[in-house]
Amino acid sequence: MLRSAAVQRINQALGFRPSGNPLEGAIISALQEAQRDLERGKTLPKFLLQEGASFTLLAGEYTAPLPSGFIRVSDDTPISTFPPEVQFFPFTSGQPSVYVIQNSVINFLIPAAQDYTLYWDYYKAADPLTSDIENAWLVSDSTTPRLGAPEWLIGEAGLRIAMDLANQNAIGTFTSMRQAGRAACFGEIVATEEASGPFQMGANL
Image (cartoon, rainbow, N blue to C red; front, side):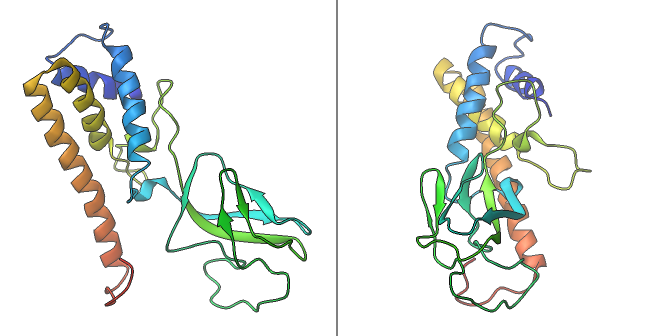
């Protein structure tokens, strides 16, 4: 789904406003605002997860730049000196083991003894909707590897506009859309976790 289709869906719930109406600039801004807010959430959707990523820490260096759009490290697959499929890797002196995420860098506190390739999963912000694109939030084609959550984002953005207009019918529509979209998104997360195996008592779910 392109941004223009999301805008049109909001137009529809606002009383079938025609395409190109003067409110569309505010609708586009609301979509961008809603995306920023959702990407600051405590629990993030899986379609923002960058799996199997890697970067290099050079010998003598103790910091590496954060990737563009970085939000946070995955709790399940933090930074490691071995790929996820390897279960054991011997520790050597000077090997990165402790790190701190700072504003623009990953700080490993001590210089690396040699060049290291480091592996991790991390959450990355979707492309901002500053042009008529389909970003990770708006992916709605069921044939793609990972669906987005267009109804959730549209509901969040539309609710902002409807509240500014004091449009009670639209407020109800967008509130329902937001709730359903969010529930579908996190329902998929739970289903995926259950398919991976049984839960363990005391595990970080």
